[in-house]
Image 1: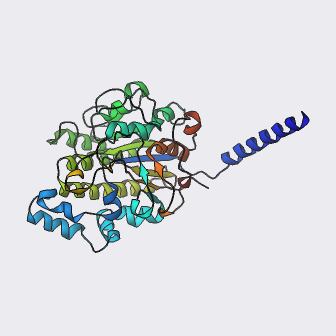
Image 2: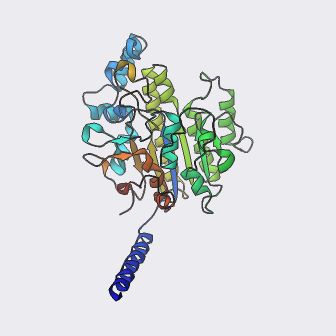
Image 3: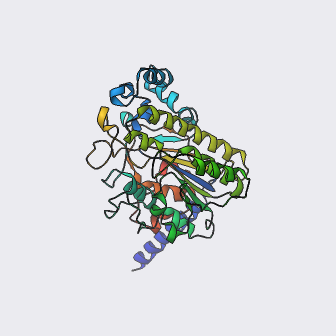
Length: 370
């Protein structure tokens, strides 16, 4: 009996010591930007533009466009091609942060929901687990509490979380009615701006643009709206959802898909540079960048994704911030999953989502301070 009591006391002491040690770990991240790039393939992230898809029958337009794409994006090696497409990713994030998902180098990142399309992907990403009830891209309020809503319920994050999301269904994914987190899609007038302010001018131009899609617009407005809002309001958690890559791919426009991807890379650079210029964000902000699903391969399936598209389960993840060790492009490591992003996001902010929601995936330890 005495031995059992002593053993339990020793375990309790060890757990207490471990908890105190965890609390004392160096932790610099106070703000976090989650940047999602809808349907952007791992193939382009890690090997750059694919020459086959540049031709007219596969996604190009005509000879002059193909020549432009070849001149702009084709290089002799995969490393040079990916740098031509995503210079900030490969000149900054790959040197100062981490990038996962290069299957060619033994780094695999996948979704676990089996659906391989947008709403199930964002639900898994933001809640930490798949939900078989989420089986359509429909405007239906998410019954699940996302990590952003969970954070929003804490005093330190209340009214300091916002979304800038280029798809009119995104407010339903975050269930803004219940969560109270504003999500600006360009279709709502729920983003207050002082008349004549830079943010007000961005919103006015967005309202005046002639859209070419019925449920989304152009990514540039979301970057600039987030940028100006960051400068004015100083939110702690910002979700920016870019959508053009997925839309251009569905339209079979590989040329526009590539240019949208390169613009995305530049938007991330702009936001990171702005964050490092502001004292509220400098050296205490982490960027997590990922996608909601992958796509297929080849001249037809690159346009598509879904449960029946082989390879659409493969995604990628990039991280840059003060608490993430600069391990660069990861290779020959264990597989990571989309359901780990929610807990990783919270852990970077010093919060334990995985313990609070045990069915969520565990945080990705290599992205956290040692």
